[in-house]
Image (tube, rainbow, N blue to C red):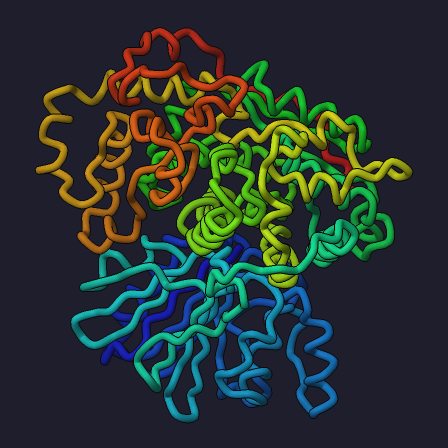
Length: 591
């Protein structure tokens, strides 16, 4: 992932302003440690911090058209860039670099503002047309890449990959909505991504396991496009294991394999003895990957919380719980020389994989909840996957959020997705069935049908318990009594949430900042609407999968009261060893 920052129409073309833009752009350097670029045209500034994945030698940004009248700063990957490049070449376009993002300026020349839906990938970009001093900005369909927009008192518009690039200089700022384009010509947004499922009408296409299988295999294969060493994140759950299995199966014939070797590297993190570590090790052995297993302690995670909140820019409880192990793991991965990983985010939203979906009353509500979950991904799992990895200059790719794959999966009659334990159809049954191949198995049966574990649970149940214990030590009952007065917006209802909120507001004190974070009640990562599915859930609100009473194999006990009131022994975080790396002895990249 790269970092982009644009300051547009600021009525200041002085050297002092240029220095300020450079200073703010450096706040994003963790996202792109390989190179920095800044283009200025009058009072418009486009800055870029590059993480070089495709064409590391010549793909520095900003990028230009032939006569340098159209300028682009981009964060992301365009998977169909070779196809687009061929068609543009036929119409006379000439390219300066081999970068996948080089096609954007030329597509704009051919199609104006109506080209964004032609891009197959994850991206955020700002394009400046110096011929008429207009600009556009756009974000990918689901919001895999992070992006914010702000407005200054001087009439300027700011676009940044992260809050920290603009929060100190804008009067107001907000999340740039996924699937949208902002145009200076209209001064507003328009939605460029308009799939059928977005209207939440109930689809009726019959379930075909082979169609679903091929669609996901294609989504994984196109993400093997890389000019740098890469690997897969492997928790041992269904989603990451399928990603690893498909990658291992098709890697041998790719350009990446010729350049870096055909043996796949896999990475996992967890507390000692956690469910994920055991399952991931088994999957890695089955697939023959070079497996790297990282152990962390509860204290390691607690020590990193402030850094995590600074980087992921949220106070959402479940996002912080899950981001911390991923943040620690990403640092270890980058230290091995790896710059890109493929991950399994998005499957649970598309297929109703969270355990609370067991209680969906009918297919209509099941489907509507999946639509709500996908639309909110940019505030939760996409934000976590993007920023936890980008904090260390690592890029995460998510094939489940491929546009074409989502269209296939969300067109299936949701009756096929419904969970029916009497018929032994557990969560995500249609995905499991699609890859249940007796002749050429993708995974061992018990992994293919392993119960869903949320990442923050799977790394070790004592991780969440330890966080709650730590919050108990630092947030008093008196503080909670006045929480509504201190934090009237999204008032924290547990001590853990209060603790995170204090840290967040220290880094991002502006009112606009707190408004970028979603709120509302949740059970096992549900939306607030889905809590209506089970009356008992309103008394057991917690985003952990173990809060799904009667569903999770290690569910919390009933009637334990609000989560924040549970008393946990503080010594759970004492006397523990530091983070350990139990992995392959070295990362071997074949020339």
